[in-house]
Length: 211
Image 1 (tube, rainbow, N blue to C red):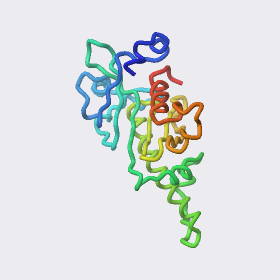
Image 2: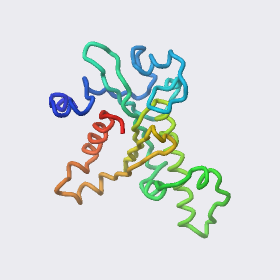
Image 3: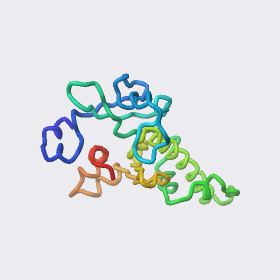
Image 4: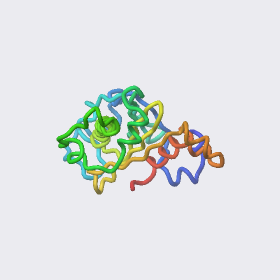
């Protein structure tokens, strides 16, 4: 990012400003942060990106990524949130099966039956659905509370890129990436499929205009 700040074509398209800072929790914010300032004024539930009043109560296992707004002020704006789940709690096979278009209330919350142990594939699908919905809705909640368009859910094996369209915030969009197995089979575009390449592309999207 420090190198990209020097490229005019990049700074004209993306709000790189004065670089990024990474914090383990929102509680580490100073009182000059935009999110803290926003908490001091009453607000209504957002329909477009805004900073909710309860951001300082969020306690995920996460890293929050902020953009410094200018060189002379400590004021900074949250760009996206990245939440980590250990692989023994959420595996790549769980993500591959559980990430799919669904109506959470109809398909998961109000489901009335649980597959029997004699149906191992159906039972694994059931557990994958429950685990993935639990993890993604938690990150989705943090995104809504922070008025964020973008978020990440990561394990040691996979990255789930998340997006909210604030014209219809009831839908959470996702893209599952597994850089370990995917990058080696794309020799002509190896750098694009690495974890670093995908994180960089995602960060630039989050720094770009909404939409």
